[in-house]
Amino acid sequence: MYWTHHFSHLETLTRARRWLAQLGFTPDRMEVHTEGVPRMAFLVTPAQFAEVKMLINAVERSDPEGWPSFWELSAYAQHAPHSVAEPVPLEADSTEDSAIGWHPLD
Figure 1 (cartoon, helix red, strand yellow):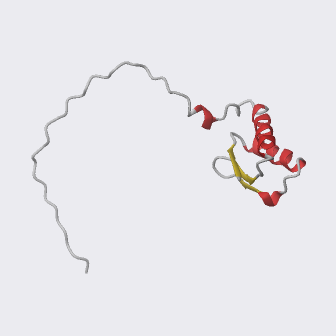
Figure 2 (tube, rainbow, N blue to C red; figure 1 turned 60 degrees about the horizontal axis):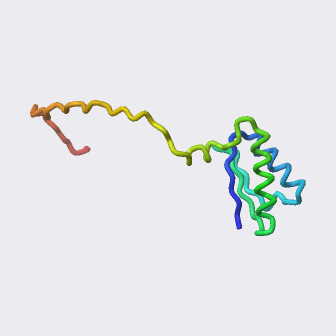
Figure 3 (tube, helix red, strand yellow; figure 1 turned 180 degrees about the vertical axis):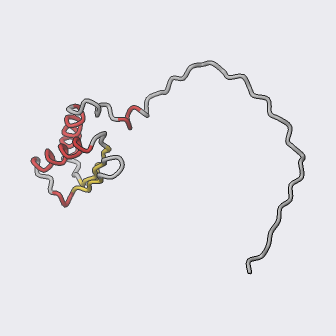
């Protein structure tokens, strides 16, 4: 199965990649994207899943802005003020005429 994770910083992704290499994950099993949101996808066996999850959580917790990640924060319920804005009255559509012209290309 594939494990995919988005990181908040490139340095955190680099650290995770280094720690995974120390655990024996070869670079040919890792797919790393550094442009845009840093992310990593790699092939894990079901037996390695818990080990990888603990490692990624440890890497994210060592990043001051990385835990919880912004992807996990977006899953939380959003609390907005309960004030209701007054409806804005719509203006009546204008009936002014306008000329539209078209000429074929020469």
